[in-house]
Image (cartoon, rainbow over all chains, first blue to last red; front, side, top):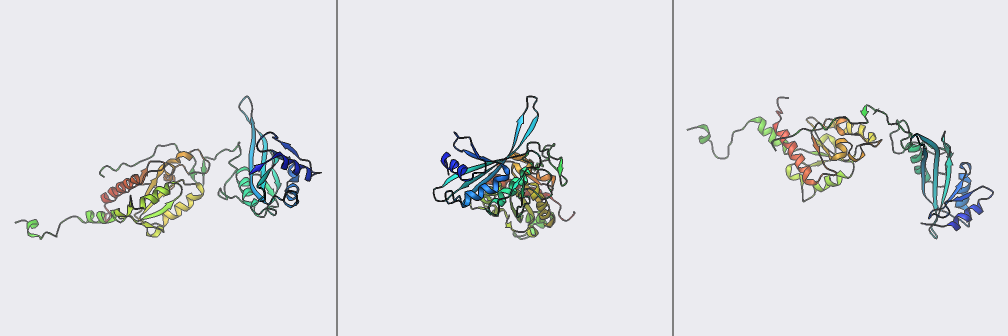
Length: 181
Length: 158
């Protein structure tokens, strides 16, 4: 995968009047930052515009952003999603970043543009609790369906038991020694 | 002249318990239940170098034909209900070998949100086998230890 500032600038230019800015310009992976409402529009342009033609969705990743105060309290700063698109003619890639609020984070689904987006979106919903609007199938993908909570949130508190199985282990192994081998 | 001297050479006298234990311990059919990297060592144990079948332990694909279940790997909460269902389908008497640190106590994942902290919280375990993962020789030793336990059981008097 090749990331370059040129392709980011071209994307920013072609999606106007949608406001987009490039952050982390000096890094190996510059990010085109857009607002959460414009995700579908920007990705649609990145796919269909003849100057871009990104035809492959590499990844959608999600993070819960936090900051730790001097007293040690964890304060949530919302969620961040990164969409990594690439194309097969010159293998260049672009990263599109979105910030989501702390409370009820939601963003429009892109699984009608890329079918493979569904599993990424289900994973982010499962582990972080970000809701993807108008998704074709938004269920948990890895955890059991009756699971409560989203474990990759920094403020996730583990329950003391799940379906009667304790989630901690206090005692040593009750190992049985077989003496006469 | 005693009874032993009168008998021909190919007759010997023993107890029913010993014969039953001897035959049962050399036909411990085990269910394939590989969950993680321990199952790679489980496959090696079935291979030609370790060759678990020389102890009469044949791999089976269904719980209904198995006496023994070797739990090889990390058990998650989602898999726990399936494991319990499979264990309950096995005919009694049934035995469990918990293979590796993960199935013993959670092991490397003992602070993970999705991993059961020990198989013995769900089903009773006969042999705990340490290691991450245990070598095939260690699994053979666990099987031999279980054979010792089976031999000592009074099968008819249960």
